[in-house]
Amino acid sequence: MGAWQGERVMEQSFRNRLVFGLCIGALSLAACGDDDDTPADTGPVDMGRTDMGPRDMGPPDEDMGADEDMGTEEDAGPPDMGPPPAAINVRVAHLVANGPNIKVCMSVGAPDSGMFADIPMELTSALGRSDGLPYRGIAYYNGALFEAGRDYQLRLFASDTLTSTTCPATAADDGSLYTLVLRARGDGSGDINTGSYYTLAATGLAADPATGMLPNVCGLLLNGPCMAGTDRTMGQVSFDVQLFVDTDPNEVDPDNVLVSVMGGSPNAPPIKICFDPDGPGDMAPVSLGLEAVRFGAVTAFAEVPMDVSAGTLAIFPMIGADMDPSSCTTLAPTGPRYVPLPLPVPAATEAMLERIDCTFTRGNRYTIFTAGIADNDCNMMTGENCTEPTDSTVIPYRVSGEEADTPEQDGCPEM
Image (cartoon, rainbow, N blue to C red; front, side, top):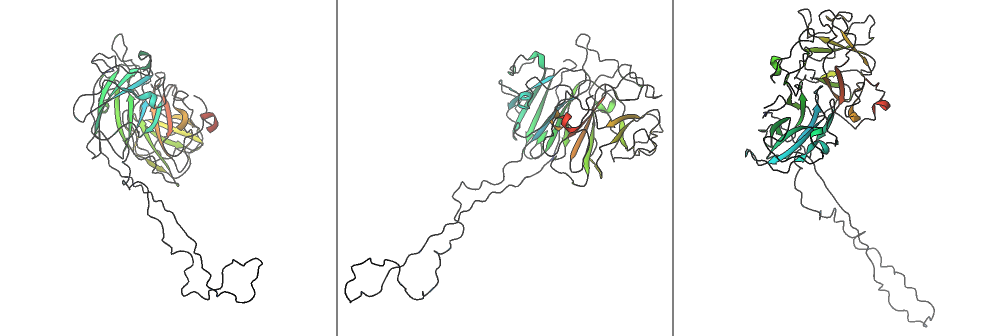
């Protein structure tokens, strides 16, 4: 099994219910008519025009008005089937800096059978990328692809190995880069469950196809060997596909920016993102409430009670005993390990841009993806050549609300 291959079954649990109702009504009214009971006229016969209008019947016994109001008619539509089933919402992110564009093929199988259909679906095209998902590409949540009570086999291919949107039949030597199985369930026992949101992220480093070796971009000087394997807690950085449980993107706060950080840069140390309102000025960075995050992990959402649209995001690598991951006030903005990222954030033009926001506004929810291979010209111990995050990328991805316009219209400078 190659460095890009493996199989992984993950256990995650989350439940949620949506309630939806529909009522249809109609109101029907009918008019009432009267008969003429006046006695016949015994005088000379009037050969002129006869008055056919209604005759005075005196006061009615009871005011009937219009026909009796029957209220809303009974709904003649289909019977109420109850609330629709909650969706399983999955988005896909490509964070492998030295990897090719990827295509994802999906096959469906009966639960816990280990057997999958030989006519798989090319999932990446369904996500709107017929050319495959590029590095820094992030596809938005799709709630129509997975159904509870089934198992799904996902296979990742380099885009240039698939000449069409047709996926090869399942086989041990199908040329896939990676294979995993997800169990979709409605009772909370699956890897992906109804009413929940997930990020399926390709992370890590691709090995050299000829040697099977990872690039030498790790260590304090970012030029040493990297540790093979997929245990992110141990610093292993081989290619892997990770499943993260997300928060419902529709849960927003009009008074706050809601933001979390996903660590996707494989050779970077744990980092803390703070906010420096005046950039290189005298003001110290202030906390956004974000925890320090290592590669392969994601922080909880922080509430930021202000728009973050100008100034600098201050990125602090957590190296050395003097670096306090719980506070920004102890991190000197002019210190050697401060990496500034000016706002608006430069946009990665390869990313799926419809939800890339370069500033952060209240009433929205964001995931900041860190990605890329940290520049080995940057000496993190001395700060030399660490003036900007060159190959490393910060992707501010808005997960709430409507789609944004293009980065040019949103005021995002290009990288």
